[in-house]
Image 1 (cartoon, helix red, strand yellow):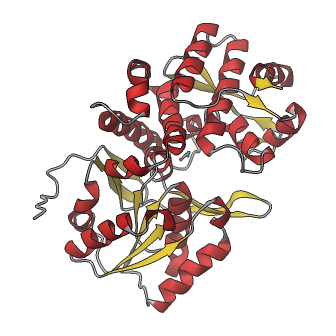
Image 2: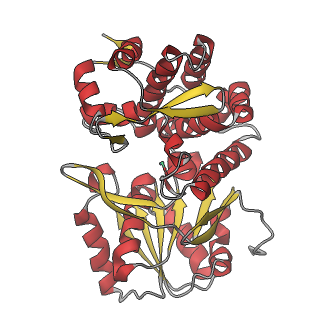
Length: 372
Ligand code: GLY
């Protein structure tokens, strides 16, 4: 019999936001405690579990049973939630189902899946009846250390990604490390890219830990998987708590590697690289720019490259025209008045931003990663 004492387990982080504070629980078997954790977070009513088909049937059943054991009348909707499903049309399917179930404002929505799932379900929860509580149960490493924390919720339009959305903070986030055991190795590596990014921009100690234990972490072996994920979650939570709406100088740092990363995804039509893989190459370009701007030494660029390679992440790019890629960077959401705000390294575990980077420098850094 599972016996859970809410409050007995320490959260990896508490995120402090204008919509309320929430805990991020990280452990093996964390899903079993979702019921008591939701009660503690003040979430009541019925639970509408919306899960990616990839979690069906085993993990969905586990979550469903845990919710019912926690006293929540639970209903589940299973959807194919790949990037191409992150649309208003899929959100409408969610609304239609919630309408059929007569879901009310006092009920809650629970998302279960990767980053697309938390973005799309978060968006549906922000808009259904002008907003119902949402709990995220991310099942990919990328969603755990990034998408599930911070409330960014959106769908894509044919004219661009994430163009319609909201800041919808969850009431609780549950990371069950067990879920990672079935994640394909490539997806796992793409998730590690975001966690390594957190270390590169903000935590030299974490960077050293990654460097000492890369192969074990990549294989999910050893004792450090949970502590490293907890630390990565803590970093994300601190940034969101300090700069919830990305109006200051903190949250933007999470975009390290993303200006080029998003451009790579766009020019390869989202079909070649996983997001974390594109970010890995983007981080190499950003490090190259940082070095050319005199902010870091070549040694740190090499350190970053070696580490990313140890996670089997790509660090070079082939079959992409540099002009097309440069053109794609100018449509990045972070560019304002035509000037991109680059996130650059200024040391191990330290980042900064600059709008003062010449096209010549970007081109040179890009050339370093392009192979024919
Ligand atoms: N994924 C970046 C952020 O949450 O701000």
